[in-house]
Length: 251
Ligand SMILES: Nc1ncnc2c1ncn2[C@@H]1O[C@H](COP(=O)(O)OP(=O)(O)O)[C@@H](O)[C@H]1O
Ligand SMILES: [Mg+2]
Image (cartoon, rainbow, N blue to C red; front, top):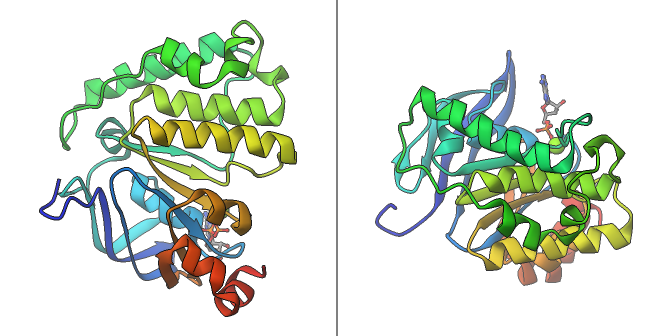
């Protein structure tokens, strides 16, 4: 950890797709234990931000620094960031449709072991979370261990995608629009799961277009627009700031 204990510090990054300049001097911090929300309209740069943090390519981060647990990880490869404790559940929930729930969770372990061969540059690897702990947090998956992932509902697939990421024991779990396309009742289930994961000690960076739901569950929010931070503060402050909400979130 850095001196002030910040888990993740993104400092003044500029990110590009080819020559398109998307993130413009973007800075944000995530503190250990919190649920931090990253909000903004479609195309604001949310996915680009979390891909930059995870070390995915594209985008291409051309300037600025990303620190995790006090270490500069800006040039650390994506797999090593994952092993080092940075987890990302991408927008498109990647589960193996023709494998069962149990097999999907086992695959998460395999990919971790493979990644271990590459070596790592940041910190000690987090402990792999025991599969029984995962099933306890996700009773719906427990009941469906032998069901093919492709036959799960959208919400159950989202839970499986989150569970797979959790198997890697991330210190920071970034969720890119986990509620997208889910029925309201299922959104509640996924919210409950996120709350439980956070209670167990995993820090969350939650990307959402559904700002109302995200403000309700988070401690702090960032709002970005055209690749720049336009608001940061406690979620209650954003809930009370009608101008910012109207202007940048349309709610
Ligand atoms: N792979 C890509 N190549 C080129 N431009 C992209 C790519 N992905 C996203 N963009 C552009 O970057 C901007 C930010 O996109 P994104 O980060 O996906 O926004 P959000 O997740 O907030 O909806 C948009 O203008 C989008 O069109
Ligand atoms: Mg996105």
